[in-house]
Length: 217
Ligand code: ATP
Image 1 (cartoon, rainbow, N blue to C red):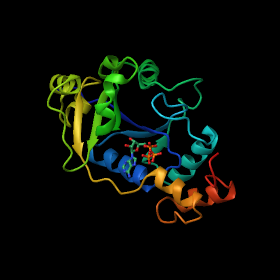
Image 2 (image 1 turned 60 degrees about the vertical axis):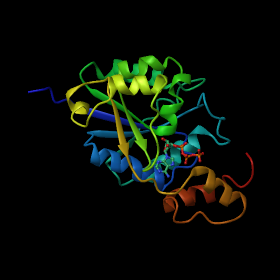
Image 3 (image 1 turned 180 degrees about the vertical axis):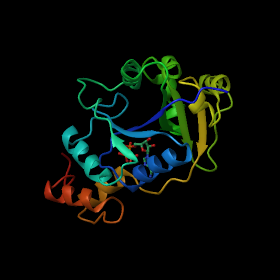
Image 4 (image 1 turned 135 degrees about the vertical axis):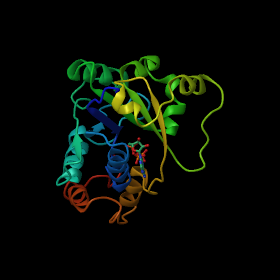
């Protein structure tokens, strides 16, 4: 019988702020793919995006409040503690060194991220260090040719591989996303409107107490 390993998944993002779209997706992936751990991984200074106009500590605090009382989701702060740009490959290398060769590591991303993968730092190393779980929306097309299509063709895997192998597979999952975005929430607050019911009450209270997102920070 094939090896059954511990499975650890990472769900990365800026979480500026965290909202129910992120939380539902992370929880659903953990349950549907049967991960032993699902870690939310806030990025410090994303290489491909603007630096968020808010402190890393505030984004971390909001995440911690959001997952209070939800043992299914945990927080991995390693990227916040790193100076300079965040590269996923560095994070996976660090985790691999920490967890050893046997543990299965999965990095979850949206299809949009997969399409831009060839521009990521040392992208060809990623599947050597872990699996990639790609979430796509119903109706979205996976590319048929190019570097990403080749990568998919040579690494495509199924659910059982996540427990049988430590790294090297790409699993594509079709999933419905809640129509919520952090950009939309920031924009509501900037315009003096309420984002209530789009994110946890505790996170909203934090935003109000600290007067976050009121204007460009
Ligand atoms: P922004 O609006 O600032 O771009 P965002 O809400 O898209 O932010 P990110 O922090 O960039 O959030 O995303 C973190 C992760 O969550 C990414 O993998 C992204 O694809 C995913 N994500 C974002 N919004 C949703 C949603 N509504 N449902 C499920 N996953 C989401």
